[in-house]
Length: 253
Image (cartoon, rainbow, N blue to C red; front, side, top):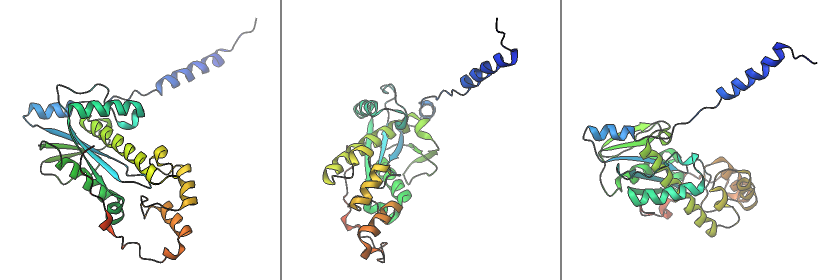
């Protein structure tokens, strides 16, 4: 009979205990903050968020949503935690039951204003385009936006405030669909797959083909690809970007 020393048998138990302790449950967004305002007579309350700050190509898409407290779709969460299929389903439900608006900051505006300013501009424009004027707005992130009502910035808001989470879904699905459309205009870059983000396939295509009309001029990989394919532009003052080509897309999906 082989006896296992007490210390040896205790180690696996400790490992199992540590493994179980490392599992952290992530609570979904709640409607708590919105309900607190409603109880104080503050209504309508909107949430807003954007999609597309990080990509090398395409616009930033911002969305603002006013949820109907009596018809909130089940399963709303931060868009990053959802599958593409579930985002599409919730997108349809949110649009069918809520007041919403979408605004776009084009590649030209991003080049001119920088990505942060362009994003805040689009968020403000989405709120202003809502079919009913909100009296309070929750916005995801550190920065408040220029709107004609109280505005509260919530860091990590798309995982905390349900109205912001709903806006994150609307913005993400709208932008994904737009990037699929841009893929048909500029084949070869794979926009329909990576949505303009700097994944290896996109970086490879950018290196092979050079920048398209939809690439953001001052993002480092785009600058490197432009210098490779168009060295004659390397010494040009690229800050004189012609923004007259900006397309003003209406705030509808």
